[in-house]
Image (cartoon, rainbow, N blue to C red; front, side):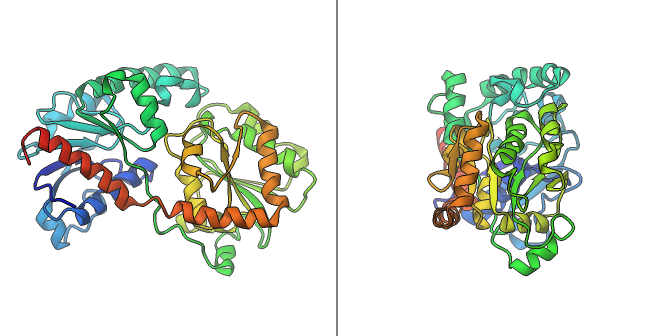
Length: 391
């Protein structure tokens, strides 16, 4: 990889006490960039809870090539958009990269940002059932994402699906939207069965077959139909349980709660708002099936994490889940409970097909690495820096 010999400022505030997909994207990208290019200098804006963005400040590479500044406001906020540029020292910065959905205004250097998806722009109903959130949060993104696009030299995103949608919505950016796929952390690999059951003993009894769902409680995750499909597929299979790790409910979710209370699955439902990393890995490994029937995704990392842990995946036949799952996943119509149920039963009833999808999933997940993510971003850094005469 060619050297960049430049100073890149990255807003790393999503690397904080509250783990998120954007936080993992940012942290892993930074770590891989430092390995990739030994001339690259990074200027990181950090959350006070993680003042070095989880880098080892005593490491020689970090001491020589990374500097840190703290800025406490929420990343996706008006204070980021309108105040950050006056609170941060931009001396010797050649390029600014925001790994999330908005850019600060008034930047005096070339800028790019990672727009993970545009579901708030396409249909706020994907994101929330709440009218006030549709108005307040929806108007925030509808105002600031287009302004950030105007201020950007390039846009990164995390799937070709998202890239196509962004270029359709912002046709002036055609040819300037690039993909840097998320990676699967090597942490997600199959655990030893006995230790895995010990890890989740408080959740589900040892040896119990279960279908697993993981994701925040936003409408686009399609959890109502996920539960309904589980009921249709397994209402007469008393040994099969349903485990859902579902945080951050975005609205009343009446349909979801009604299905969860269905007497046909009483005693077989395990609803968790939080699990540890080791519990999540054990759940991924020991699940019979991982169900991910999203109506919309920018990427869909949980499906790949489950594949990496050796569990076959049922996911949507549309959008980014279709793209990311490739030929390894079982594809279903996310709008059809019957289709989702059929996908579940296909894996459950056919042992040969099940084993084939399990092996294919492990191979598919191995294609997505954080090193490749960093390489994609680094390539665009060099394009911009060459255009501006820095390199």
